[in-house]
Length: 315
Image 1 (cartoon, rainbow, N blue to C red):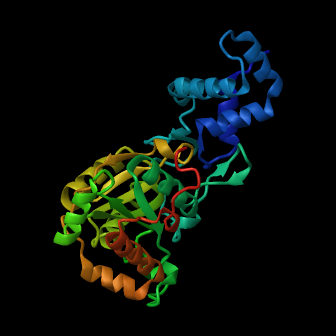
Image 2 (image 1 turned 120 degrees about the vertical axis):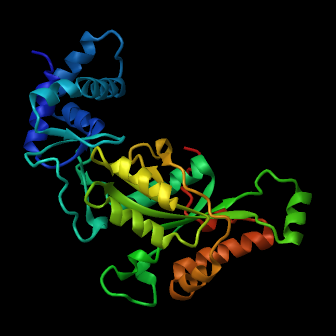
């Protein structure tokens, strides 16, 4: 009878209106729900030998056929940036207002049946990318630990979600390290990251200026998101970058090491230690971050176990 892939994709999205799925999530659902048809497809193919290869083939076919089933079903939309997400909507292209607490935004993972995409899940994913690809030691900052309470989400403009330390001395000779210590020269660069599950036309400016505000102290400030939606969102981000220098990281929740810097941040030559002092006085997480930076400058030992480095950083 055949798999009839296009019909199954369309039916799945129609039956899960307004929910967003990657091609891999849709393919995994198809494998789970139609095992007989999927095995017949594998048998007919001369190049597919395993279920993993079959899953990859279905993912590729969904991407290949996307323009065709979107032409036939204009209700099917996709997000702009990778990993592309597919969804069925009868709403216009005008983005809807975001909920008050972005950290509660979720996307159901039909491969596992669990809610997988929210801000808190993205923190370790971003940390893994920062370590494996950029060798940045990162640390989570919890705004709820601030001693100065500013009402509901009042600290969101002050504290970043993650902070990072870049060790500039990794490949330096011992004599150079000692010389730099004597001359009090720079051995690190400090990074700041504001994390969002999704950026779109309705929230992009607020998210960007939140990143501007809470990364003003750092050498590099970044806005990081798993999804970037709408044709004009990237255009807006590039325009804002030209004015304020905040960079953009695309987080890949399915393959953290494939996350990428879409817009490099503009470096600020000096750390704003006065702002750091304020954050340190009010937040225990930021105090711990500053202690780790200070210890590294004193000992040349970054103490990896004290940072949010994944247990298997080489993967």
